[in-house]
Image (cartoon, rainbow, N blue to C red; front, side, top):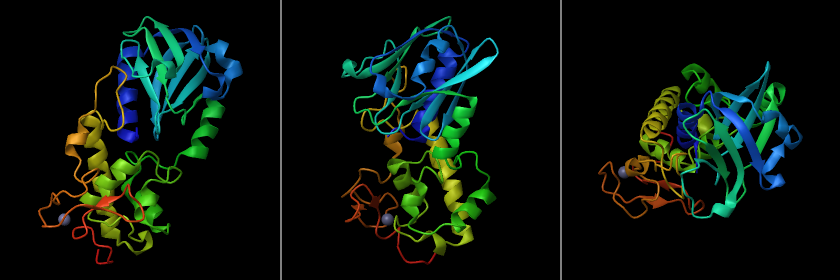
Length: 279
Ligand SMILES: [Zn+2]
């Protein structure tokens, strides 16, 4: 957490509130929060925020100064958040970077990261291309269906880890993998190479539906996700299996939602999500 839908909500808010604003100052509290490019920090002063893109669970802010473009990429996976000045956090000492803006709807953007699993990177265009190529597989929202089918058919292994493998499909984490597999009626341990083509197409459609629904709900606020303006995502109310151990299956099959013995973060219905290769 955050996963793709939450990162998309962050990107949308940054576009709405800060596109066209000028970066007045960028203060880095801890040098080790910047993965690469710290020596280019002074370039960003006076640059204009020209675009905001989401890659996987990361958000890239594109800045322009004179004729040059440079990027600030914020990793949000695990515990990182981008917050406007007015959004309070429980542990303000974990704000590691402050960017102050003029000419936007917000005056400051903060990178808050209490556990420092994520980092910021300051990159030029070539650096951003390398960064993306190294870290991110296809985007589940934009990959064409036939390409997704080919991609899955070329893989082996269990379906849940594959959905969460960022270098294959970028953006799905544990929460959405659980929700997607329940709706697709696939056991988390199903062997990918044994899935029928029609099952993979259904899986593709469900991935699209779940992620888009989650984005329209503002994401899921589990373990402290807040959008930059402080709002909580409402998709948690739509979760069918994540965190529902011991509750009746929402398909009313009569069984109880369980966790995998070997993988405590995997929730599933033992009846609706059979591990037998019937589908
Ligand atoms: Zn069931």
